[in-house]
Image 1: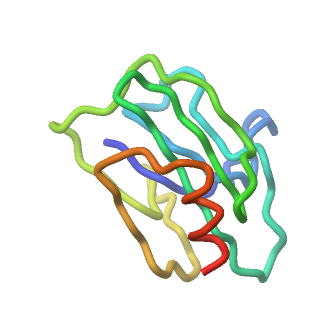
Image 2 (image 1 turned 180 degrees about the horizontal axis):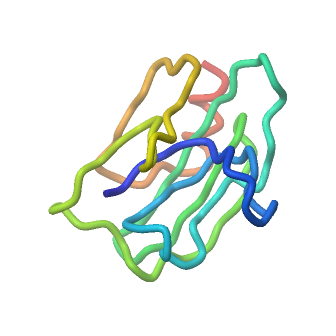
Length: 116
């Protein structure tokens, strides 16, 4: 399974209340996260890009907040979720204007989307 959700699980404190891009299982190392805790009760513009080689970028409100490389990149044979993880961790708020592209957006495109 692959999906995006906001982590509210207080385990280590390192990713609490950040947005996560989660692939596979709980033992997946170095789960990419936004490294930014959004302000409560405000809309947040979240963009995650990933190349075929595993290079990723996390943008929050048009600002690059994290980047790196994922070793176990996505596969067409796994399910995709937005707003949920496993074991009952579900997004309990509003999600609007979800877009999925077949290419990696440039930083300029991310900023333009944020300013729409």
